[in-house]
Length: 312
Ligand code: SF4
Image (cartoon, rainbow, N blue to C red; front, side, top):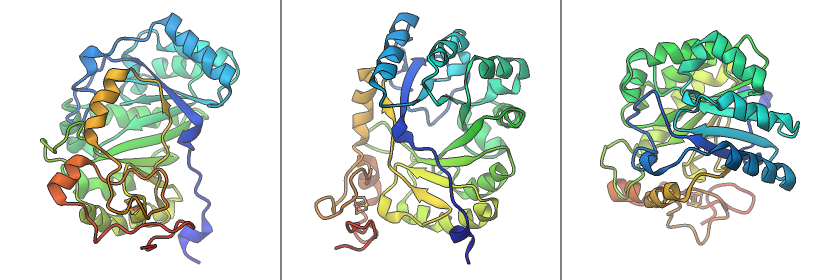
C-alpha cells in the first residue's frame, strides 16, 4: 500500500474560520506583500469595532474559528487584549494568528499570547535562509522565524506554515518543505502568488507546467512525514493527490473594502472550461497569468460531478 493510502491527512477547514484584520503595521518589508498598494488606506480596528464584530460572530454561530491578522499582527501592542476578549466567550475552538513568526522567538512574548488564548499559528516561511531574507527584505528574519516555530513545540498548539510560490523561490520549494517537516509543524500551505494587479509586473508568477514539475519532488520530500501540503489559489483540476491537496476554500474575511478593490485586479476565476466544469469554487487562472502564459486550455481539464478530471 502506498504512503498516501495509509495516512489520514488532517487539514484545517478554512470555511469554518472568520478573519478580522486588526492592524496594518509590520516589521518586515516583503516583496510579495498583498497589502503594499493599500496599507496606507486601511485603518486599525479599534476595540469597540472589534468587540462588535466578535459579538456578531458569536451570535451568528456560523464561524467557530477566528483568525486575527493584519499586516504583522504581532507588532500590534494590544493583540493580547483583543485575543483575551475573543477567548472570553468560550465560543471559538481555534484562535489563530497569521504572522511572520519573528516575535515568537521571544519566549516571554509567546507565553503571553498563548496565555491570552491563541492556540493556532499560521506562520509565513517563503524559503530557506537567504531566500526568505531576500523576500522579506529583512536580514536575519529566517533565523528568527524558525526559532519562533521551534518555541511553539513547547505548547499544545496547532502550527501551519504558509509559503507563497514565486519564480524566485520555486526551485528551492521542495527543500524548504523537507525542512519544515522536521520542525514542529502540523500542516503546510503553498499559496499562489497574488500580483494584486492586472499584469505580472514583478515577474513572479509561476507557470502551471512549472508547478506540475515540482509535485514529484515535493511529494518525495514530505511523503514520509505524514504531513499534508495544501495548495491555495491554483486550478483544482491540477491536484496531484496526497500528500498534496489543491483546495479553494477560504475563510470569511472581514477586511475593509479598499482591499477588495485592489484584490479584484487579480481577476482570478478565469477558465475556458467554466461552463462545463463542476468545480464550484476553483480559482482558475488570474488575469496576469493569462496575459503572461495563456489560458492553458491544453493543461486544464474540467471536473466531472464526482470531482474527477477529464469531463470534457
Ligand atoms: S477546468 Fe475546472 S478545475 Fe480546472 S481550472 Fe477550470 S474551473 Fe478550475
